[in-house]
Image (cartoon, rainbow, N blue to C red):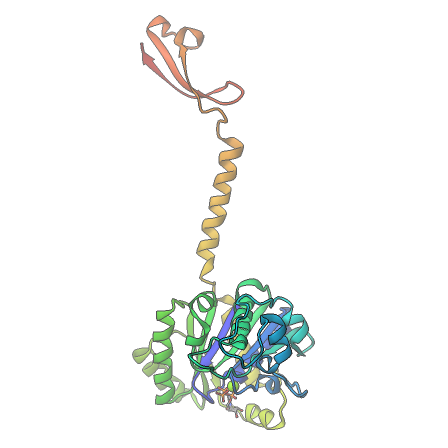
Length: 324
Ligand SMILES: Nc1ncnc2c1ncn2[C@@H]1O[C@H](COP(=O)(O)OP(=O)(O)OP(=O)(O)O)[C@@H](O)[C@H]1O
Ligand SMILES: [Mg+2]
């Protein structure tokens, strides 16, 4: 499952991304957590205290893979750099070792737009993660989703917009909804974070439903556990009250049927049909005209003939009797 987590600054994207990554791991999944936010604090939320070098700053890697010197805009470089070993060789391990963290970093825009070696490498990597990997991929994103590109985002199974009960985050959610529609993301859900009480949950839920109308799959309460863990730079306790609420969200997520299920169903039926045709259908489609008198069971005699379809063993599968 490939999940992108987006929303306005400070709403709790990193908290939710890191906690979901840990919950997927706890439930036996292998996870690739991607920090795609230039702010880069997913490592800290996952409890990694090593110094982090983002991929965008690994000049040697970028040069080796793209064949271009970093910073040399306009130089010729490979547009299909090798990326399939990057998870194994350039990620940080988190959780109990089954979370691989990839930190993308910031790409300085060069010249006319972002066609620089680093951006080519990172886009290619994201595409690889979404299209080719079997692990659960959780992407902690910045608010915009435009930079991902249509082909990549079309293949995200689930996009979660984190919102907090405020007018501003309502507006961001509206904008994201429009963007998601533009690039064909259909599995778009909202999570309302930092809910202070039931009244707020109900009032905001209603406003959100009326004004934005993205299905809400979870409400996470405001909790001191989150802010104090943040202060200490360690992940929250998954057994705490807020941890249990994120677990409830996790359960909702794994019960969402990805959009590709109907397609998968069609493919299975198609494969079954082809197999059926090859294995069972008459191998010899020749239409044979047989004299009715050749068929002892039929008493049509000379005036009738049988038009039949036979299989390779000459067994008549279908026939009609016609007057000659
Ligand atoms: N449910 C919550 N209860 C209390 N505090 C929370 C909760 N969720 C997040 N926070 C706090 O809100 C702040 C922002 O959270 P977080 O860094 O996860 O947001 P973000 O959307 O990733 O922000 P940014 O856009 O800066 O990357 C942090 O101080 C965090 O501790
Ligand atoms: Mg963040």
